[in-house]
Every structure is written in structure tokens, then in C-alpha cells.
Image (cartoon, rainbow, N blue to C red; front, side, top):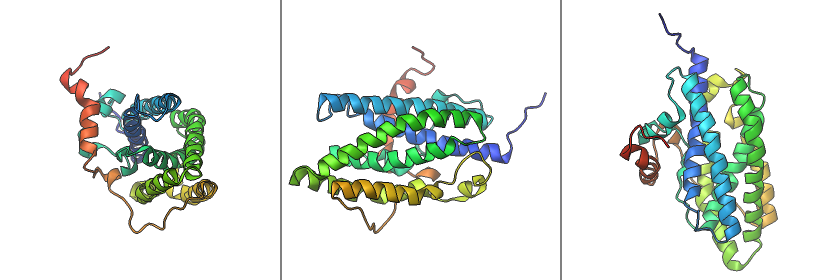
Length: 258
């Protein structure tokens, strides 16, 4: 008996889906750190719910990546069984939470990107990815609104809240460019119908985030540098401890189930 190997397009789509799954998984883990530490009880619940939504996204995407690449790896295999260099998330999502304004700035950048991306993927020729995108786009729309409202609230608040929100934007914005990187994988997938080249979303993202920042009376950029490397497995110093915490139970009790 022979096993059919996935063709080039399927392998490319698997890598693309893996990137999205890793983004969602790592950002979910970061947001979980706010549980019991958020500024208000309501915000504690809001960030918890957003983290759970992202974890749900990660489960679907990682499981689908394992099916597409022909390896048969499960969502747990990919979440808990890989080393740091094998993760393909962008550097933005692994940034430390910082103070609340830094988290809001990170959410502002990611949620506007994710909403545009999932909206485009609703037309994917891959039925699993298209069905996932329809549901995820609806959930991410709430995340986007939450981040935008907090950006405006902090920007128009006190001098201190405005200062900290501006500092958060200054820290986070250089990492946004990686979301739209146009590498060889994106070039190959462009036009296949299965995925969308993230670079095509940049203009809409610029326009939408600029509108929020204008409403908040804040500014972003121009940035003097841009982060890169996460899609190739090159991560920040802070990613190792995050991954160690994420995988600690699985590594202590390999094969354990609830």
C-alpha cells in the first residue's frame, strides 16, 4: 500500500494554516496571563473570552494543518510537541503583555489584521478553511471593536492614559509589518484560491487603524525599523519562557488525558 503525498499547493496551504494557528495559540496564551490581573472584573472576563476564542481558532487551524501536510499530527501534537524553532507565529503575538495599554495596542494591530484576513478567507476554495473563516470573522469582529474602544478611551482619557497608550503604540507598531510579509510562500499561494496574500490586506489595515487612532487623537509611526523572522522560526527572547509554560503539563505527563 502506498500513501498519497500531498502536492505542493497542499503543503503550502498547510504551512499557511500553521502560521495562522500559531498566531492564535500564542496570543491566546499571552492573554490568559491577564486572568485575575485585568484592570476591572469586566475586563478580566472580556480578555478571558477573547483568549478562549483564539484557543478555539488554534485548535481548528492546527488540526487542519496536520491533515493538510499529510503527517496526521493532531492539534495537541503541534501545540505541545514542537520546539521553539518549529513555531511559525509572528513576533507581534509573542510580545510580553506590558501594561494594559501595550496589550491594547497589540490587540488593535492584530484584530484589524485578523478581521480582514478571515473575511478574505471566507472565499477560500478549501472548504474547511472557508467554514472556519466565516465563524472566526464574526468572533474577531468583537475583538476588533473591543480593542478600538479601549484605544479611544485611553487616548481621550487622562494625560497619563494618553501617554501610556501612545507609548504602547510606539512599542508595538514596528511589529505589525510582519503580519503582511510577502514571502515565497505567499507568492506561490497567491491566485490558487486557497489562501490570500497578506500583503493585499495592508492598505485596508492602514486605513482602518488610522481611523481609530485619529478618533483616539493618537499617532503611529513612521517606524524606523520592522520586526521579522517569526515565520521562519526565529523568535524573541521572551518566547522560550512562554512556550515552556504552555507545554509544561504535557511534558510532565506525556500522553495524559483529562
